[in-house]
Length: 56
Image (cartoon, rainbow, N blue to C red):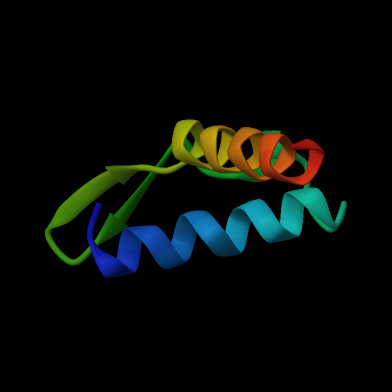
């Protein structure tokens, strides 16, 4: 995961966890330059990791 993709995933995860967005509003993929990245699945994983870390 490159820096741009990581920042997008972290930002979307924060918005979803803060209930400013729902996961369905996160795009499945996001084009950055000439590359397309899977975003929603990575956001779901990031949210799961944050939840586990908060409960550990």
